[in-house]
Length: 131
Image (cartoon, rainbow, N blue to C red; front, side, top):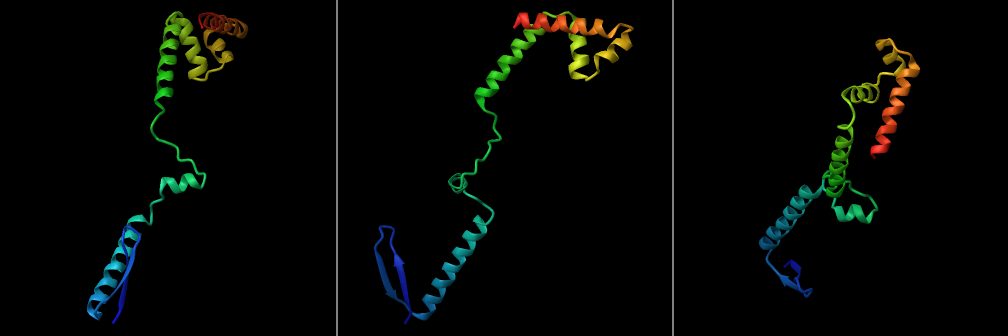
């Protein structure tokens, strides 16, 4: 007669002699359990295992403190930029957002390159003073 070895949750072990039919069903259940466990976990890596291996998993969630600081900075920048004239804001947007060079702006407006450069310098000085 075949013998089944069983370990209880408290760690004690026991052996039981069973008939062939029961042993076959028991072994089928054990194999089924192993296959199900493998199927469930074959593509999964535990975060604990990754951390133990020294692999950092970046979070897709934004850092709440960083988000708050960015909002505060954006409010401050909006407040500062609101103190610029519309022409000054447009000039900065054209250069820094649209990526048009000062020389090109000077050509478009029929001004000297140095004039546009001086205007931008004054705007930046004004922004520095407001900061």
